[in-house]
Length: 104
Image (tube, rainbow, N blue to C red; front, side, top):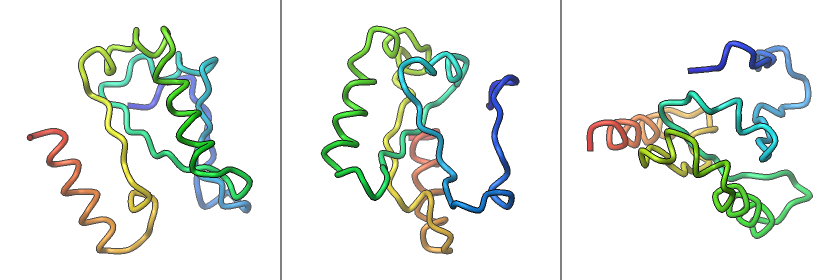
């Protein structure tokens, strides 16, 4: 569920193809009420995968992250880039993962 005070632009309104939101430690309150958290660890062209992995590790190591109900309930999943690809195969893979996450 999206927090009521969370602002975003519909993808169709974006000209720069930046559809993901950078979520830093100071913004973790935005997802405090989330039932599940899905992490898509991707960066920009200026970031290496090592930079992205280090940023995710920093968030996951924070005390604030550990207070989130979804984290405490072990309802956090790291997902792959196929969640962001517009193909039938990618959609089927993502749906199979959602089924596994929710139903085992």
